[in-house]
Image 1 (spheres, rainbow, N blue to C red):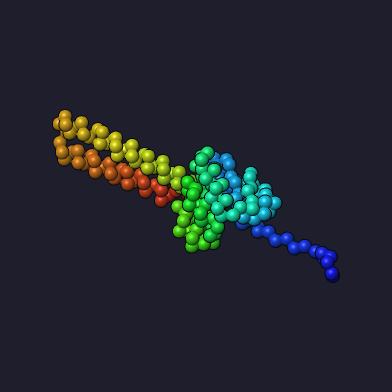
Image 2 (cartoon, rainbow, N blue to C red):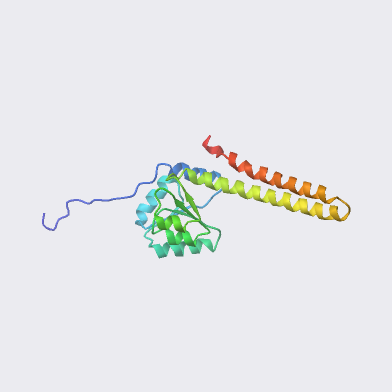
Length: 193
């Protein structure tokens, strides 16, 4: 009708259904600061962040600005970046750990990421973090066992332990390390019931 506005249309991304639950589980794991960096308008980013329980939202960011944001955060502490698009790939590459959402992720994001979740479900993110922490604990345990056996066996063989007994003890420790690592197959996310 001439130069009069008759209405306005606003479009906004909606958060994934599992986002709020995943954010709560990440907080339970001890992840305190979560920031949503987005190319969307600042008000839209703030609205979505508030809806899912994220403290901070940085909107209106171009891909190179996302990289700068990740680098600034990384200068303070290690940073994990979760993304799924072409625009997220450079920022994921700059993060301490880049995590791509598998099914929805672009090929570039999947290639760039350090970790790719094979399902398009944010609920798998707390599981992946919990599993990685358990893996780190088991690796440390295995190093202690392996090095401990060597520390004991070297002087023991010098002071008279037979080579057969030393080899048997060493190989036995290898079986202990393997059995300990196999515990990862039984890892379950306790928060998922």
